[in-house]
Amino acid sequence: MGETIHVKKVTVSYLKAAKANGDKVTMLTGYDYPTAAALDVAGIDMILVGDSLGMVVLGYDSTIPVTMEDMIHHTKPVVRAAKRAMVVADMPFMSYQISKKEGMRNAARLMQEAGADAVKLEGGEEIAKTVRAIVDAGIPVIGHLGLTPQSINVFGGYDLQAKGIAEAEKLITDAQALETAGASAIVLEKIPAPVAKYVTENIGISTIGIGAGPDCDGQVLVMHDVVGLFDKFVPKFSKQYAMIGPLMRQAFTDYVTEVKSGAFPAEEHSFPADPDLVEALAARGRPRSKGN
Image (cartoon, rainbow, N blue to C red; front, side, top):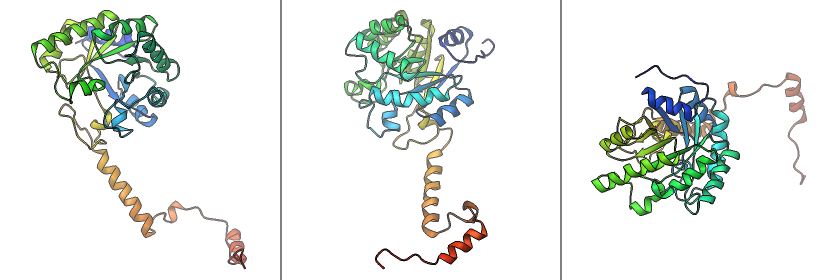
């Protein structure tokens, strides 16, 4: 492993150099300004504005209902906060599957309107032509293989992917197709570690794993899982580095209790008035109601 690469702004050139240098790439999701600012200060290489926001921010049961307007809305504040990190915006369900032209148009929206540095698409050979067209238009693309949440209705659940030989061969072929199409990196989600290791060692672009073992070129997790903010379930492949959710709930409970009891706001939370103003208010007495 070579020396760590230091850059003012992470770009696709950084990803290429990291792959050659053996440096691990870090990615976490972010959907708002304060979170993105904290991620950027922490030194995260890439912030993914994922369509996972549908579940962890908007309360949907899947990523399917997420729209282009949702993605643009949430990408904008992340871009404003990220000074170093590359901002990658997910292209939501049916924003690129209908046609190559539609995919190019929506990728351009995420770049022009939202300010993203790159876009992410789910799929392999079947979207390779769209990926090539988007890249040729000057827009960096990150691929996504394995468990692709937008296809959850086809998979029938969030099960491990590429478990068998045929599935693994298909994933390898898809990864090669995405590399040939010009993708800058590929997210590998919920696949056996040996499969991810093979793909990582046999393509020339970075792999970013989520539930794909330790041998990928980088790792990505959903921020809400990392800090304990999403309590419906915790994926096996995620690690909770903090438990912010319980702290927030306790803080909110304490606030409700103190407001109802009169403990908040206390004197230190209030603004005093000039004594003359206090005296003048007292002299006014209680105002009469309009009916009197």
